[in-house]
Structures are given as structure tokens and as C-alpha cells.
Amino acid sequence: MTEGRFPEGFLWGVATAAYQIEGAVAEDGRGESIWDRFSHTPGKVYQGHTGDVACDHYHRYRADVEEMARLGVGAYRFSVAWPRIFPQGRGQANPKGLDFYRRLIDALRERGIVPVVTLYHWDLPQALQERGGWAHRDTAYRFADYAAYLFDRLDEAVPYWITQNEPFVVAILGHVTGEHAPGLQDPMAGFRAAHHLLLSHALALQAYREGGRRHGRIGITLNLSPVEPAGDDPEDEAAARRLDGLLNRWFLDPLFRGAYPSDMVAHFAGLGLPLPEPPQEEMRAIAAPIDFLGVNYYSRQLVRHEPGEPLMAMRQVEGPLPKTAMGWEVYPEGLRRLLERLRHEYTGELPILITENGAAFDDAVSPDGAVHDPARVAYLRDHLLAVSRAIDDGVPVRGYFLWSLMDNFEWAHGYSKRFGVLYVDFDTQARIWKDSAHWYRRVIEANAVVD
Ligand SMILES: OC[C@@H]1[C@@H](O)[C@H](O)[C@@H](O)c2[nH]c(CCc3ccccc3)c[n+]21
Image (cartoon, rainbow, N blue to C red):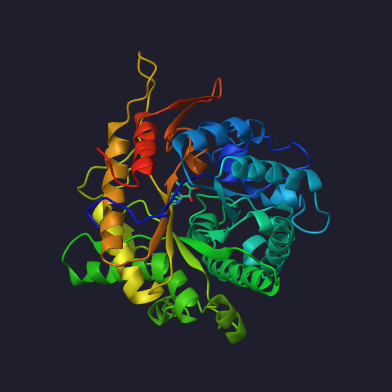
């Protein structure tokens, strides 16, 4: 394979998530989510931005699907808002909520675009949070009920299901640092949430497998990063190993080896965080075979030993490489190395989908009405070349989903960070193709990296 070319049938896509684009938060019976509550809590989100309107995708989805068709994508990764399906998280279903996703999937299939559905992308029904949320084991069972409800009604039309998006972020940013909803700062809640998120994945996987006439493929999406020491001090190496243990291995090991990483369990026990021994049948269920692993890659983590930091004795440091508007280093080589590591240490011949990769830059509409984003084109080109090299080395990457189709609600950053290849003017809801959209369309058409 010549560098930058992709295998026949490679799945080219774009990705979004419900709370970040839909808006219409009180329409057609949708219940409150923890991100509605969090974003409306003063001080949590940049300038008090919320997802109340976002990209108004709930009403504009047909035009957005047309934009995807113009891009030529073969697939579209989006998430279902649990509070649209079960406004209280459990019990009474809301048919109008399901109807929206039926309309969206029909519009996609009319244009020959494959739906890739994420069951959970952070918008837990608030009513479940009030019963303990992810820190409460019962939530995992409610998730499996919600998943089975969708499998039974949408499986014919959905070839790819993703159970969870980034359990690390949900557990740690939501329950330990408090940067994300529900905004808790309680390490034990974080570890309980991490386990219940993996358990929820296992229970949904069981529901899928036992559902008999299931036609599609099911997997989970993890945010994974290479973690490197900022200096050559052995203490920095040890700090990097610890963050690798929490960021990557805390989720990869249960999913692919059936146990939490013992070095990290010992580390936390040493801190007086005696993690309860999870029931063996739960660990076996978590390690049940999946059909693909979804990988979200953005950058690397650079760490130093930090004795004063109570949980991990480490701190992240700013690296020397060029950065995106998020302050994340542009490090495409890290993606190739991550994919090689995954194949050799965890996934073997299991197919991998890059379910998110992209960058935020300070985009602006220029006087000619265009949006020139050369830095994003360079970021995407270099990361696609890295994927192509990994494939040439034999890593079975089957698809790539660019984050994101359009600028959207970037969580605690609100609308201040633009990841889209389509620029959104949030005053008019106009979508404007950035140069990167024109470029990505040509890549898809050529099935290769173009200049
Ligand atoms: O930050 C860009 C995207 C989000 O908009 C997606 O919803 C989310 O799946 C996602 N994950 C990551 C990498 C992990 C991360 C998440 C949040 C904050 C910092 C890092 C980057 N992103």
C-alpha cells in the first residue's frame, strides 16, 4: 500500500453527540439530563453557555444529512439521547423521542450513509442521577434496559452500536475532578462509576448477543493517549506509568484481560482507597468478546512526578509541540504508536474504528465568506497518514470518524471551541464549509490522503 492510501471499503465518517448538537431540550417529551442541569448551574460552563439550542439539529437534521452526503461520508456516528427515549431514565418510554431517531436513520439510509449509534455520550437522565447515577450499580441495569429497548426497535437499521463513549471521562471528569456533569469530587464515586460503566457495557452486550436476530456489530469507545514522562527522571517514568494505568489500562485491562491493572489497584489501596473486589462474574461479563474497539485519539499526555498530588502523585505538563486551541499538542506519531500498542498488547486482529479524531482552532469567516483552516487540514492530514502507516503495518483499522461534522457545544468550553469541518454561525444557524470540509471530501473521494 503506498503511503496515504486506504484499503478498499474503508469506512469514512464524521462524528457528533446528542447533547452537543440537538438542542430542543424540552421538546417532544425529552426529559432533563445531567448536562442540562450542569450547564444551567452558574460557573460550570464558559460564559454560562448551554445545550438548550446548540446546532438546532433536532429540527435541521435533514439539511445536516444533506451536508454529510455532499461530503461523501459512508457513515455517520451520532449518539441517542437517553432522556428522549426514557425521560425518567426508566419506566415509561417516550415514543416521540424514538421517532426522531427513526427519522434521522431513515434520512441517512436514503443517502446511503451507515448509522453508527453511540448509546451513551454523557447525557444521563437527571432522574437517574438523583438515584445515585453511575456511582450506583442499579444505573448499569437501567442502561441495559434502555439499550435492549433500542436494539429491539432499531437493530435492523443500525449496523454498528457503541455502548459507551469514554468511560474514563465520565468517571474521572464527572466524579473526581468535577469538570463535567454531574460535577462530583469524590474519588470513590469515580471508581464505582468506572466499574458500573464497564458493567453497563457488559449488560448491554449480553442483551445484544441474547437478542437472537441481531444483525450488527457492537463495541465500546475509549479515549486513549500515549503517556510520556516530561523528563528522564525515573520518578517521571513512574508517574507516566501511573497515568497510563488510569487513563488507558484501567479500561483496556478489564475489557481485554478480565481484571483491573494490579499495579493501579495496589497504588490506590496504598492511598487508603480500598477498591471493593468486583464480583468475578461481572469481570468475566466485562471481558466478553466485542466486534470492534472504538478509539478516540487527540493527543498525548506529558507528565511529571508531583509528590503533593494526592491521587496520582503526578501533574500534566505542557509539551513543546505545536498546539490546538484546546492546548493539546499536535502529535500524529502518537496515534500510530497507540494503534501498534493496542494491536500487540490488547486487540490483536480485532477491528478498530477511529471513532474520534480532530482539532479545535480559532476559526473565523473571512471577508470572502470562506473559512480558511490550514492548521486543521494539516492536523487531519498528518493523523490520517499515521493511520495509513499503522494499517500498512497490519493494524486492522476499518474506519475513521472525524470529530466533528460541525462546530458544536464543547462541554465546559461551551461554544468557544470549534471542532467542526463545517463552521456554525450560532446567531443564524448557518453552516459554512471550512477548507477542511472541501479537503476531507476529496480524501474520501480518493480513498487516500490528498494535498
Ligand atoms: O473535546 C473534543 C471531543 C468532545 O467534543 C467529544 O464529545 C468527546 O467524545 C471527546 N473526547 C475527547 C478526548 C478526551 C477528553 C474529553 C474531554 C476533555 C478532555 C479530553 C475529545 N472529545
